[in-house]
Image 1 (tube, rainbow, N blue to C red):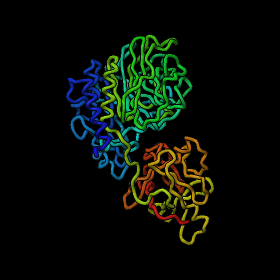
Image 2 (cartoon, helix red, strand yellow):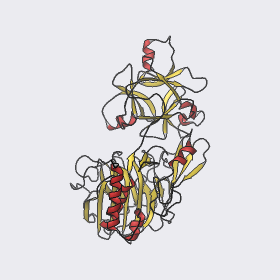
Image 3 (spheres, rainbow, N blue to C red):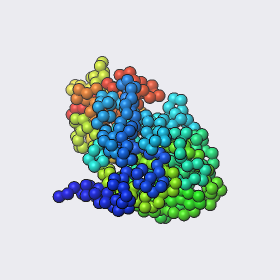
Image 4 (cartoon, rainbow, N blue to C red):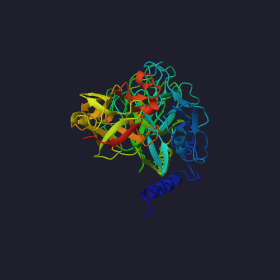
Length: 507
């Protein structure tokens, strides 16, 4: 039997070729160029966006020595060489520090600086993303996306060739349609150069999330909308558009485009089928949006004023000079489908299976008789042995459940308090009853992998903050970031403190 993903890929390639018969092979930016709307920014950590591109895709920095390396495609026009990242980052943490522009305009994205809102860095800068937070495969080849947690953001305030004023432009992005929140604002696109809100019409960016303060679509969201500054627009006005659907696709192709007097929203499933048009019509009637006053900065994961409360996942995206035709966008969608995006393994390491009861022993020298446990709602480490009381043994035993926010990861239920789970709150670990909320589900989902110190250990990262790992510090439990701003993020002994010996539960 022919693999269905491969069959869909070939059908998409044939469809693409019928749209643009002059191109023997077309990647997204080849397609836009053929339509006379060339890419002026092209960002992806998963693949080349030109069929002839073999340059850098992104840079990672490892926590052990702060050195960096560049990840490029495996072959010309191909998928990222994720194995080179894995080798470079083995046994330590890694962050994505630069996402390179493939267009030749130099519109690289890096750590966003402070703005109207300050980021969580000690100097007000935003965080940058974990290099392993969003693993995927493209036609079976491993790659990594950009997992944006609240407080994470990238920016380029000196965009070259990016639309300014009322000039026409288009943009698309491939996103995770299941990773979102209502915070402001998970954006990719054109924003202010000052990092502040300079007024209506000074932005034109893809927004994805379920904020309904300024506008909304059908159902409860999340929705694709356009962030045009001081409004998230699903249609002509800043309110409701019943033609803008709630999105549930695991991989979602999102499109925003605008020209004098007109703009459009389009979207579709990133693994099959075509695009649908959610809106195509006049600019908003409120003052400031017609004509537009775009400034030409580029943002990812944040609002134009550096609002940093949003979350989402970005795999690839471009910005164009000129207003792309529907035919060009349809061909880009066919290419995205042909790329074969699929979910990848989220966890690794020994001892993890749903339903098993496990204990987690500290491996840091001098503390290795202690286990992850709890006293009431406080999560800490305690000395546990065969002679310990039954109540202490239960407090140091955890039942592995399917991850509430991601079924590929785990949630840890207390053995002695059924219905209560390990979670983080303000980066401190707690034991809390499941309240069924989206926030609880995300805060109580953890993804284990082989321990950073090796030797049969496991390290366990927070699903919704993949730069943060379960750590003991002064015998208290945290989710900590290697070398971050908190005292418990201290880089000294970090690798040992986040590496746990996983064994059978005591009770």
